[in-house]
Image (cartoon, rainbow, N blue to C red; front, top):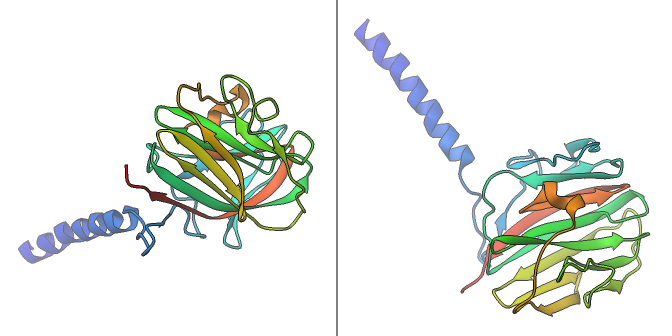
Length: 215
């Protein structure tokens, strides 16, 4: 009886140990990048609390976000891996619809900002918001043609003095944020501090990763 009791006591310990192992941080590669999505499970990503969110599912190594009415998206549960001095990168593809297929909301210290990709009818890129002006109204406003069913690599870099952003190898944002007010539009608040949203558009997201930078 004593041996049996010891065995049964040991089994939960093994289970807890395994849970800790599987819940641990993903390994960091030689360049400092840490995966935030394993291609199989949602992990810490959860459906964002939009009033009429589209369906969110993992599919073929991606997080598939179906069209919301008007918004859909995901949010990182808990404290984000970094709030300052980091780079975040992902690949996104518009699969249906004609508006932004990636609104990447990311922390900037205690605040947050959104890099809009393909908004306002499908072509606009920029940061929302800078000094309360959204991506269509501030100096980061730009345009770019996006093809459906084509992957784009999206990257943002945040330091105490700058926000930079790229699509593929093209840098589209290089903004000195010293003394600037950084915020998000109220529509994407469910994604704060780290999340990805779409507007009347379906998309697929993959290869989400982050690396911390030296202060």
